[in-house]
Length: 294
Image (cartoon, rainbow, N blue to C red):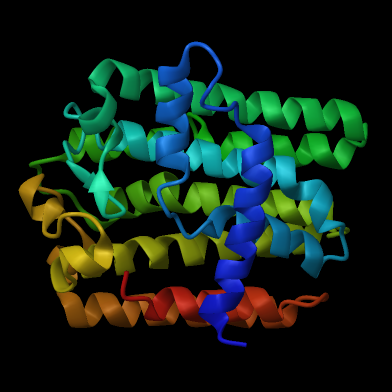
């Protein structure tokens, strides 16, 4: 089977579970639930929830029990995109080929939709922790919380914002990438591994894989911002230049940045190959991410 189809099949599974976790559009007040669902079901690849599922499977766990956590991490990711697109931050009009939340529902409702998704994510995970009553699920929620929090994604977003229009060094750029992007991928892989039967050594290895894949993913995203098209990306290109952001593409050039992506991905794959369990899908996913064109 084509690997893109395998990803799509897993994304469809995530979407079917997401339907059960999100409020329906007919509940009062309808506008907030419509705004939440508009962004969640905007056609994302579901890479983070898929990583949760596949990391759990790789370590012998029951992937179906990961679904509250897998869907929660996608809710958190979606909230971050809604807020990133706001005029106060990146000020983007399009996301995944259609109007951003604030363009559809207004700025105030977009803020509230992001807030609602963040809180609903933790409500969804907390309910699962209570029902499953096993410490490994608490550890999974903690891993996701750490990835999304003040020492993870939020910290990266803060430094990204205060660095706009400034000449920053590689250490600052790496801090942004490791926190704004990689921290959530670490959280996805680590939470899945926690819900499997991963040992402490494997947890450390999977965290390193998440960091490498996350940074490489962001560098590739920055390269595509320069080299791709609106039709392929589903969002405006050259947005980093518009927002006066320094990226690996502008700091090192496209060719060297692409080489760095390849080296990081190779290291991640080597680590995955060194681990026990069935890492085949995660290896192929890493290879797919560095070759993607959208």
